[in-house]
Image (tube, rainbow, N blue to C red; front, side):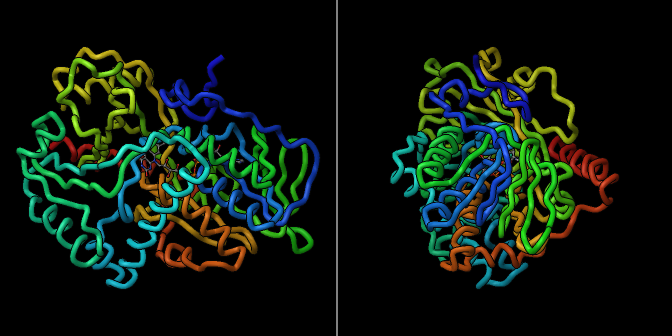
Length: 428
Ligand SMILES: Cc1cc2nc3c(=O)[nH]c(=O)nc-3n(C[C@H](O)[C@H](O)[C@H](O)COP(=O)(O)OP(=O)(O)OC[C@H]3O[C@@H](n4cnc5c(N)ncnc54)[C@H](O)[C@@H]3O)c2cc1C
């Protein structure tokens, strides 16, 4: 039977096309390890892989199945740089730190592509990405972004697109202009996380699915993780639960919050060859970003709708089809074969959260919709830090990430109000 993630709605097109998804046994009894990792997405698994390869004993527990979180259900767009544009980061942090963060993201991109090639993970990489403007009036900023990427950040792959080129490349005149990035691309995210788990397991990491961490506590200079059928005792712990932190650890919960985002896959677009003929991924300038791309078999995978409460929407497909039709009226009756959602972990300033939250316990997440390449690299960098090989993670650790206001009880309602307000502004 097709597997339905218990923590996110809908069966994804990724699930339908991933092929074999190996199972890992639940933890049954207590165990010890140098490092314990909570969360089996890209962050946790990359850390497990690098640590195991470095000769460290590592146990990773996943509450559900590998890939049930954001890593197996996302839009697959790698992007370039951090989520904030380099000039924004430069204004806030100065050129050197902004450049270091840009370079870190380029290292992340290269690492991910090399990793997939080395392990023969066919993650269906397709090149190209476009960021497009849904409102006029910011053309100068778009031109400037492309220009400084080349002149100040050593990245010559971004190019401004005028209205005509934007319309041709998208097959739609819905957008005003944009930038074209030939130095990045998009992937099948579930194939990546399944292949990554295989690589981590082959390197010697012990992986346990269906094993939720119930509590994390300190005793006798060690960290203990309680699970339903045993306790893990470790010298160090990585919390890699991202948007799914729940009540497990309060500092992470105050800094990383979930937004639910939904994606629909259409039937193959064989009869509509003008839709993104170059096969690039697209992300628009709305606050509730619309992100879409064609799959290797010619479907449109379209993400757009967001939800700020835990209620499951009744009909993901109908909403997504309406959004598709605003951009592609000719697709207003297209069949949506799969509709699904997942939780994106966001932080207040929309930058990653990297922090020691208890002695020996590091928490990493909150990539704010820009985590496909960054989460893979952050997991690796955490491991490199433990192994004493690299301190690059410090650039992210040193970012100022404030907690969400409101405390445990008011945090969610306040976030709901703020996001609903910003989402409304997209309409005017
Ligand atoms: C719909 C959607 C679209 C997105 N699109 C893009 C995109 O196009 N580009 C981009 O860069 N980013 C995108 N993202 C974000 C990206 O997917 C994430 O940043 C990235 O996958 C984070 O990986 P992670 O390993 O940190 O977290 P996750 O993959 O979410 O993994 C966390 C894991 O921790 C487990 N867990 C939680 N609590 C416990 C516990 N107590 N015990 C054990 N395990 C636990 C969860 O079950 C989960 O599997 C998108 C996200 C979503 C949801």
